[in-house]
Amino acid sequence: MSTVAESLGLAVQLVLGADAELLGVVGLSLRVSLTACALGAGVGLLLGAWLAVARFRGVAGLVWGLNTLLALPSVVVGLSVYLLLSRAGPLGSLGILFTPTAMVVAQSMLVVPLIAALSRRLVLDALSEGGEQLQSLGAGPLQRALLMLVHERLAVLTVLLTAFGRAISEVGAVMIVGGNIDGVTRVMTTAIALETSKGDLPLALALGLVLLGVVGVVNLGIAALQARADASATAPAAAADAPRREPRAEAVAVPRAAPGPELLRLQAAGLRFGRVQALRPLTLALRRGESLALVGANGAGKTSLLRLLHGLLPCTEGQREVVPLQPEGQLPVAAMLFQRPFLLRLSVRNNVLLGLALRGVPKAQRPARCTEALQRVGLQALAGRDARSLSGGQQQRLALARAWALQPDILFLDEPTASLDPSAKREVESLIADVAAAGVTLVMSTHNLGQVKRLASRVLYLEAGRVAVDLPTAAFFGSELPADAAAFLKGELAWA
Image (cartoon, rainbow, N blue to C red):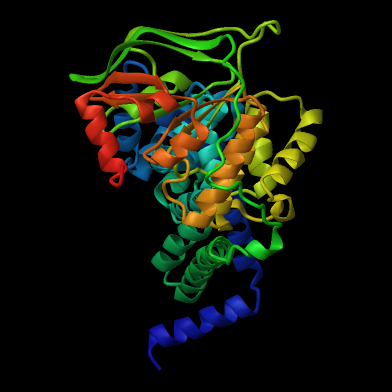
């Protein structure tokens, strides 16, 4: 039998026999590395989230420095901690050199840059999908970043596993600051190095097997959680579990009262992205109770105007002014329904409750408002379900419930039914009609001119970033229009 085979057999016996020396080294390794990862996660996740949304001079240099630290050799970290903690160092009075505490410090310094850099990238990718929608709900920049870490929590676990793997497999730093003292600071990696140099291959192999086993078990746990989440997200929507609404007939127009006082106005407001003039300066007033439809070809500026009115984009020219409600005196509440709603990986109920929390609704009022909103859209029976497992139409209804729960004075809608099938379109449009009938001001970007006829009281036709037509709905469809607007109308309603 070869020496390697004999050594491997003895190593397996040590593991299966729970050798005391082996257990002591493994236990210390786990305590040091898990503590370092916990501390590193507390600092690294917050740092990564902050760097993802920070906007100040020098932030690019900080990111460069963070990425540079990813390649920092562990022996350099060990030397730095040694100089800090040695008797002549600034922290020498603590007396923690050659203790497990010093090893925790060294490993924490190794994993913080790794966790921060990976979590920053994770947050940036998630924000590109749903950051604007969280902003619409009232979340500040750092709130949005932290919510994305919650949303991508399984990916965060993978980041932490990577950090744990680096910490528990590290040799140089813990050797320098721990001293590899038997029974005090000897961990698996330093023990493997020492026992191999001494020729004690069975113990070194046993420690190596345990090290692989620990990382493997943690990885299997994360994989199981991921599989469970994937199964939940891809489960059938079970629409039969929720009571279905009877959609409002498509041909019925929403009755609207005469528009009231102004809620929002733009004064010579324009929008420019670098050299591109997305919106030419325009003056526009939005009144209480009216329903404004924004129509035009792709690239005409509908979405830019919608976001400018909502405050998601700042004016680069002129100004946007929100007018206090009369006689109440407070500013009008605004909410937005997007074409593809972004829902956090939380339950249906918690997605609505989160929107209420971000807007500062008192905690005591949130449950009742959430329940009422879900009942209005027919999703109360699915309140405990994973929001990401709903069908497209149900997700849009949930997004509308989230906005409805805020009790908005103005509801902005960006192509709210464009990605839905005909049945879901009728359901969502029926709900929007209910919102409008309740007196909420609507501003809607759409290509669906039938929807404009049914829901809008006023139509703005945009062309190349300017408002070319601003007319009541009946006049827009019944009077002579400029050539470009008439051609657009004929193209959308080819039978007209």
